[in-house]
Image (cartoon, rainbow, N blue to C red; front, side):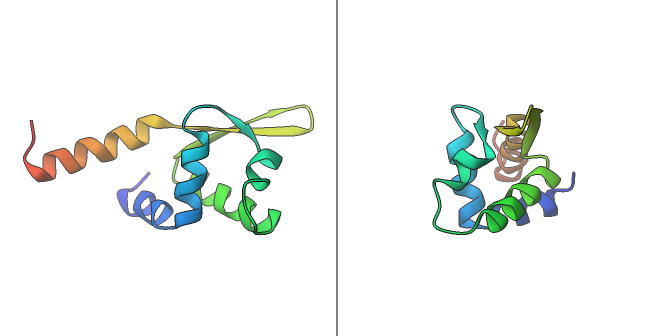
Length: 88
């Protein structure tokens, strides 16, 4: 995935909040929706953008879809920023 797509996904505060929710555990889509005062369809779109940027992964278990953070992409961004800053 490209850095531009990742940065676009991270630019939205709702998507950043979703990532915060997934930081410590995986969650079902319905549990994610319950944390927000916007429609399930809007959350679904945010999840789609995060998935396209490879920031999250999903797993279907029966009727439920569970989402979890893909920390490897975030690590790549941190390495890029550290390199840009000149950190070793």
